[in-house]
Length: 111
Length: 121
Image (cartoon, rainbow over all chains, first blue to last red; front, side):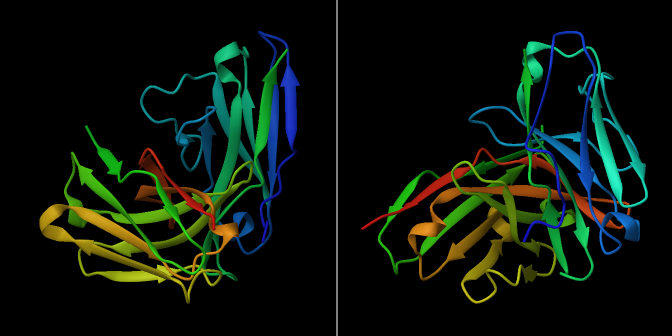
């Protein structure tokens, strides 16, 4: 069951800013649970990119930022670079399912 | 550094079981939950369940509840995920990940390298 909805793909030229949305509901994002973003480069395991309220783990460039509004969150990538080509997933907890849930995933393409 | 190292790829026949291991290092094993997440080819990530190494408590997604067993060996800092009654749709990369508590839930950091399980007759 896909309870967190993301656009299938976004693209941008090098140096541009792109945003990825993640739409949830009152039982997950809207309930106040932490929302996290992961980057998955081709053929590799996901890596934590944004934790909770726009916190970046050590080593993650400040070009990546997160925001929240109601039952949705967004990931922004500014100064897009070729190395940012990857799949991006949001993740939270859903109280009605009593389960951790992931977004549908968004593929970022650098033109 | 914090690291999770998983067992290698497996090929199984439909109806069989598979057991994947995840060895933790670089942190106190009993202090963090370990989650299992799978990803079928070209598909999104799917949470399967978790274990609290300190006491062995587990919880699984309703989707896998009847088929998945998660255990741990504290002496070896290793967590195991066993999936029974395999079918072709279970072909996927299986990941373990350390759960870090943030804002009332867990984020997953870091992840193991993944273990490919192929189910084919």
